[in-house]
Image 1 (cartoon, helix red, strand yellow):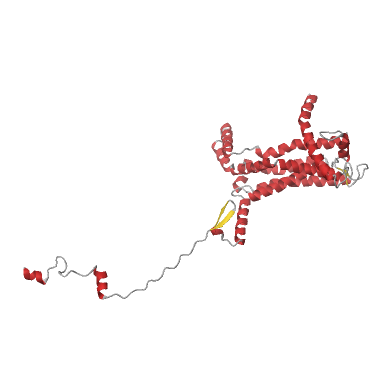
Image 2 (cartoon, helix red, strand yellow; image 1 turned 180 degrees about the horizontal axis):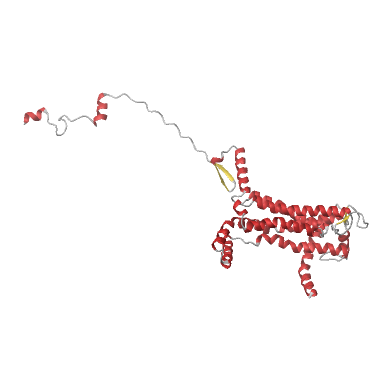
Amino acid sequence: MFDFFGTIGGLIMTPLYYVVSAVMLAWHKLFSLFLDPNGGASWLLSIVGLTLVIRAALIPLFVKQIKSSRNMALLQPQVRELQKKYKHDRERLAQETMKLYKEAGTNPFASCLPILLQMPIFFALFRMIDQAAKKGTAHGFLTEDLADQFGQSRLFGDAGTNEGIPISGTFLSGDGTAVMILAACLVVAMTATTFLTQRQLMAKNMPPEALTGPYAQQQKMLLYVLPVVFAVGGVAFPIGVLMYWTTSNLWTMSQQFYVIRRNPAPGTPAAKAKAERDAEKAKRKGVSTGDVSLEKGSATAVVEEPEAPRPRVQPQRQTKAQRTKQQGGGSRPSGGAKGVPTKSNKKKR
């Protein structure tokens, strides 16, 4: 049974060994131009280069993760309404909730994609370092000589001696105080960056109404549980693997900061901060914020032309006949007003 699962695991991991080793060897060849090829610095920087390549390839998934997390937060008020409406029918509640997510174009599992896709690469790197250090086993494009060089490489020392810090060393390996100090620092950095990344998302890119309810409670629980899990497991990770995960967390935190700053969710502290920055920028340019319409990031000033003053008409002096004409609608007929008998009419009668 164990042999069967070992065979399946080998089939899954073998392609990853080739991908990871190819990227690492390319970076190692570059750093070997000015660093010692056998030294730990060239191999550790190669792991950093591997992290940058992997994270750059995952940028589309990361953007999808940010959008999914934002949409999930914005949909929480509607989810709570569904929970009140179908609180006695769990099956109908699940159907209506998934229908709501589908109509909104979001997927609750999309936020887990980047970390799930990184885990196999993480384990591949872990096994490459561990087996290269303990057995000199080569994986992927690593030859036996390169695997031995990789496994025995040391920081601040020579691979042929016991001086320096081995990148395969762990906090629990008992390789000396220097190894324990460096490993502890990397574990703390990995834990802190994990916490700050999740905290940044909740504090800046979630509206106040999304910070209550089951989803918010789940996020708050993960905020404190995940760092603890990484801290407990980190004491058994090699320094090279800790460097990979810490670099990945720093990339995630920086990338998330950029996305939230440029495209925050409506009604969040980040959106309010962006509006204040836009207003301050318009003020520095000398444009009133009340007369500025922002379309696609460009500000257009709307300036109204003042009306020209109308010339004042001076009154003109009128004759008596003109004034009589304006008041009485014109001069009376010689025969007098209609229906009023005159002296000539009386004589005729």
